[in-house]
Image 1 (tube, one colour):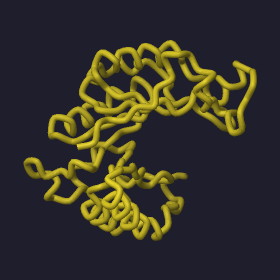
Image 2 (image 1 turned 45 degrees about the vertical axis):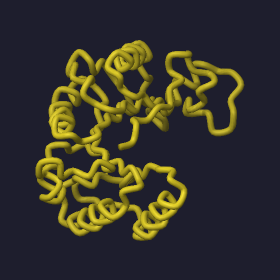
Image 3 (image 1 turned 180 degrees about the vertical axis):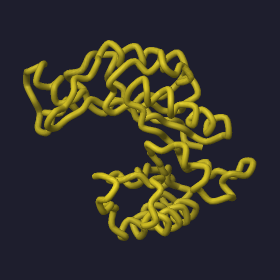
Length: 224
């Protein structure tokens, strides 16, 4: 990572996969989700991403049976980078979701207004609070405008501890808002601090059977 480093993108085979998945969804009637650029940010302002964005948006438009999730740490760039037709009244494809990473109060204060703006324009919106590092509600109480909250604790070397108190408050607030909650994991430090029977791959705290009852949530918004 870093300003001068090459960006690593998902291989071009993803475009063939998108077409295949969409055809399968047409046959079965069962939608599936696609999380775009899990190794990068489609809305980073770099010359080598211009063509990639164009191809990605064309693929999304041609695959309306899939729910395409676009996550960014640069929400201020979204309106200027999506196709102009998406910015017109009711032009944003209903099957394309827009989300921002919001990990702490500072990020909530700076990024949440953009998410609220997308929501006001009819976009299905989500927030990825992973890792959740602070009280988001105090900095940006407009979480009632989002359709989905994704929460997760940090893992790997130097992982920071998930604030369970702040997490519970946010989850319970989403209940009042009618916002779907998807809890990914409680993090490796939580797993270490709560030893017990660990199923395979559970060292990051991604084993819901060990979580507090309020955290056992794997919800998604209702598709259009």
